[in-house]
Image (cartoon, rainbow, N blue to C red):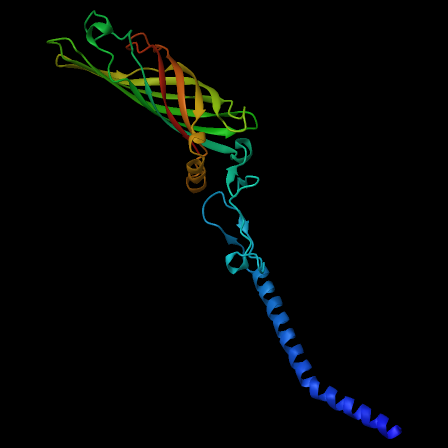
Length: 291
């Protein structure tokens, strides 16, 4: 009986020794696989942050995420100030008050129905309308640099314009060119809604005008002394008409908003009595871009 027991344990020992090389080999493979995974995670998590190109993107960290379907197993961070729409793959802007920066700019181009009806022709006692028709109108380029607050914006305003008109009276050649330069203070209520769909604003300050008139061979030109002006208007956002283009313009060029605007303007006469009188009340409108 003892002999049978010894023989049984001997056979069992032989079987165990025959299987050990396979077990040890499998253990080596598992350890090598585990070491590779650990090394890959360590390299990716310790690598320097990669910055997505374009203003408005966040810094993202290279994180190993095996099996998530993204190239190289990286977690993709969406552009800052864009959030996913529930139940879809689309993105939408966060609210205007949340995404805009502390400082901003507005650039605009406008056309105004300017008409200096009180202007008197050099050396001629006649009304402005007797010699000059409606004319081209006032074309103006403007810039605003503003400080954004939670409920409003304030800033500085600067513009330069050009107005030209020629006489339509037979046998009387006359041409008048006017270039107004304005410098003022700007105020707007641009966070009344989630997006600045309608923005009331005012600005006012001082202005001067360079003028040049040629009449029957004689020339009169100069620059008026400063006087004051005032403007009030409404800006209406156009981004809603094409959301995808607006988002692309924001991401690639930093354009916050595109506005159509209309405004009423008042320009007072020069404080110098000898200056020509360019006093006028007129309406203007155009386009503005906010950055």
